[in-house]
Image 1 (cartoon, chains in turn orange, cyan):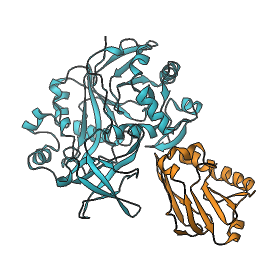
Image 2: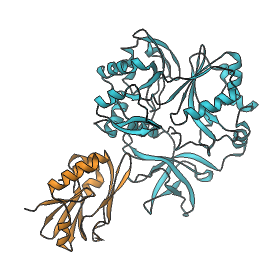
Image 3: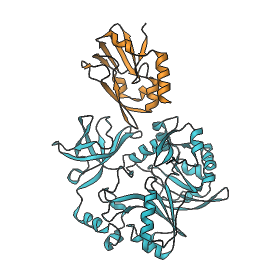
Length: 126
Length: 368
């Protein structure tokens, strides 16, 4: 059982062994509105902590998706590219974005737990 | 300057609207169901739009007002029938567009519906052009409520009997709770519908009655996706002072009768462009994949030469894919021409296409 952590850019990350699954939070989807487009990083590519690792677009605007930790992209969720509305429906579970083989486990320590994130989300959207 | 609120502000709040500032007004961008659902509800059922931020300009006068307005608008106003409407533009001497508008002939003169962001400037320009000769009122005491979509006629007719008999682009006075309201069969979504000019104090109660009959409030977000699918221009994006009606591919809105005589502001340029053609022209653009090309996206031809720019682009919920409009060099404006759109540094294939993206269903004959 591993704890889910959260970033200030509204991504969630769940670590199992050295593979992290990353998506965007429910709060992020509520701010974005209906998501109609998703672009994911390429499998096999390397992404750096806080770097761009994808894009989501609502009817209103485009937003970058960042990766909260560094690593190699080992899997991506084609289902959300084919039907981006899945991201609004189930953002913190089946609508994950990509999986990383992480480089540096200590990067996880810089992220927030659920309680802190909920507080952060509430404060920043007020 | 403090942002203004429309008479429906409380109702928007009651319906959980998310607000944005638009042209100095607090306006609802969407409600709880979101833009995609609101868009589809309008196409399949009936949506209500608070467009009270738009200008309702009344100009009073008779024959000489018609003569004076024909020097300004490229319309055959002498032959515009009572209670009939036309789409037109306020232009500068170079035929650059100050605003696009709907003008309706009424007994006392004309009603002109202006864009919210342009209305004060339009008023100033028209006041100067008409040199105080005709009484002009930019009416702040009236709200403007649009109801759009296939069920709208039935819903509105249940509250204001007789609106069913209106034809598209015509209007009349009706009564609602002993108030005179002016209703036109028109709108900007590509659907059958109406626009209701109503005293501010009665806008809320009318809208609540429409909601009770099954219509729903729709925000500016869906209004934008609806109008773009319908191929309709948004001022400040698809139209501005650097574009002429001919370049905007709106020559259908210029009276042929008036072109033959000229003699309206911008007519020299319009006539020249109609004869010689234009360098750039507005077209529909359909990206091949799911990529959304937004305003200011650069357009390239197959030889990688920059040939134009997107002026409006979004995801079209009824088309179920991305849609866009933009200006390209004339030689690349033919339907099915392959172009490339530069989005986030990559070039994505797209095709020039006809407009609208979504077929209109306006009512031509009255349903009696």
